[in-house]
Length: 262
View (tube, rainbow, N blue to C red):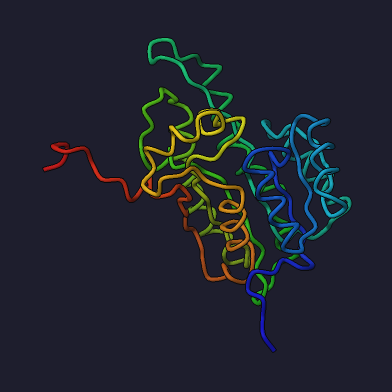
């Protein structure tokens, strides 16, 4: 009997920041692979609209997870209807850009809270549900959405974003080392240029942005869905603590400028 390594049939997933952008790409991919997907975002109307668009296997669960209280509230609402959770995607995030001498504390705290604190405390709050779903033959999965800005420098002055995504990549490794004993596998995705509300340059000037990408194009929805499905499915059951750049080669396959390296 053959096994579909990429099937998510019968699995339950939660995707934060799932109403738009990368979160929506992942949610749709999971649904197409057979999963039942709960999406969350702080804007209820957007969350409801996306769930309606993605069909009956997508359920809206609006919640602001930028605080520990919000993360716990989302976990409580989810576990009231789903005591077992197979897949958690920590995707909700924020960015802030400002010149070095003008960078505000508010921009620092907002980004660090949502991009680093939220994934940790939401995973903590859902630890029991993930553990209840996990078995040696079908581990539960936690997928953190980081960024290539956590691996390579971006010329934009997004200080807290750079710091938060670097922190999330290392936090992924540390969480993985703890949770693997419970058959909960933690990994991360580091997206590059995908058209979204957060990455308006890729959305509005894709051809121009593509000129700096070794592969010559920005990311497509199915590029993001594919790597998330890989990590969430049987195909990714022996991947633990890894961060996968999905960026057309920007972070790891860009050649330095002539004369920049010895």
